[in-house]
Image (cartoon, rainbow, N blue to C red; front, side, top):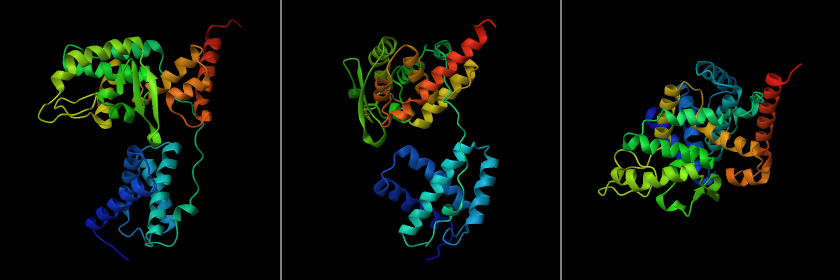
Length: 295
């Protein structure tokens, strides 16, 4: 069945979103990425049921060059499009999947970016805590670093999830874990809960979220990322919110924590995912040796 027009594309995207959530059971963050990538495809091709593999490959290459995407990001784009054409096959809109004919780029074997403790302290120090939003932001990023949270996990925390110096976190695939909160983050949280959150809370629109926006609503991932980027620029650093999670894991291993414990704290289902931080730790030691060891 052939569809045309922006309305048809919007309807197809809406059906695809339901497919990702209900049948694939993907997380909100992944769904958002997939919808964005497929949306770009539908802007380029009005009839995805007839587009050829060569045309899709040219689109992926051009889109990657235009957005300066890494090979890892291009691979994510291909995953999104592969899923979309599978959805078209399931819906019997299309009989084949053109992504099966397109080679996935070799991923760069890069290590996660890690910030030093001094860099993180400097980042937190530039946050102006003379107002309620500044106190909230410093507390938010203290907690993300102290507990090694993903940005989506931080946004989803409710007030009741913090009890007895422990934080209850719902991670990927709705997996729950309990994480101890460090002393510095504890102090920030207590101040935020007692002095700041009540000023942000709106009785007209009550919200259970731990971290609230200026109108009393739950902070979104996008809002958290935007605030973080502003502070990073102010501090003259180069990192993302996820760098705090990478740094949390690396600093624990540098301090002598065992790999299995770090795996549990991060919520990794496979310990091989956690093992990459041992390579980060080793590379840090190698740089220190090269810098300070006499020839």
